[in-house]
Structures are given as structure tokens and as C-alpha cells.
Length: 159
Image (tube, rainbow, N blue to C red; front, side, top):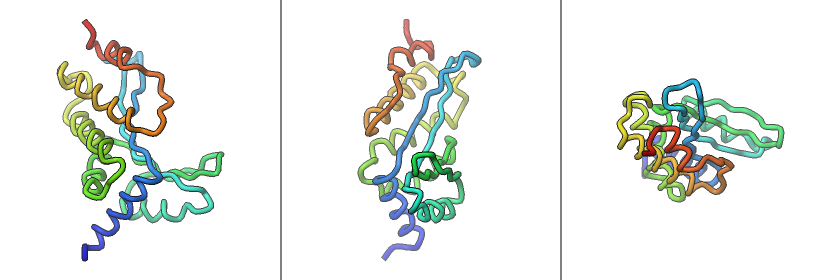
């Protein structure tokens, strides 16, 4: 039988697989050199009437913030490249349905943790664009209208 930490990680990974999202959001910005800012997020959702597991998960992970939405859903959000990478590294052995997104987000966080966006090489930026669209393609629904072409243009990756 596994340790308590493994059991908790497996439970949290299962919760993420069923009621969670992995996101690499791109915020277009005119006040930055590259014209964009990236934000890594793990988000877990639950009906507000049954939000207790989110508080337990937050306590186990030691990070994140809980908020109640107007539609009766409570969410636990964890932001930040290092925080997301560390958590996903712990959970990845147990993630089943979002494994491809978890790999891509972990890779993106590792890349973005190493150095600021404005000094990433052309090949690193292209890898980041590819990882962004791997995550987006695998997600159930993405409301983003940002195209690969627009992101490439913003990051000066077009000829």
C-alpha cells in the first residue's frame, strides 16, 4: 500500500481529471516588449454546496485560493509557473485523462521559469506556442479567440 502522500496525490489527480482544468493563458499586452504575457493555472471546480473537498485539497497542497462564483460553483485556483510545475510533477504519475495537458503545461512552466519571456530564443518561443496549443486543443472548451498566427505575430515569430 502507498504512503499517505501518494494516496492524497492520487485523489487530487483524480479530482483534477474529473473536475479540473489546466490552462496556459495568454494575455495580450501592448505594454510589454513581446506583446504578450503567459499565466499558468490549475483550477479545480465544485458545486458550492459540496465545496469541502476543495478546502481539503488547498490544505494538502498548501497553496491556492478559493472563490465562489455567482453561478453556484466554487473554484480552487493555483497560479504561477513554479507552483504549477511542482504540483503537476507530484500529480502526473496519477493523472489519466489530462496527462497530455499536464505534460505540456509542466514543460511550458519549466521553460517560463528559466528566463523571462523577452529573452527566450526563437526556438523556445516556438516551443511555447506549440505547448500552448497542445493544451488548448486538449481542453474541453476554450473560449479564446487567439489564433496561432496572431500569437506568432505578437511574439515576432513571423517572417
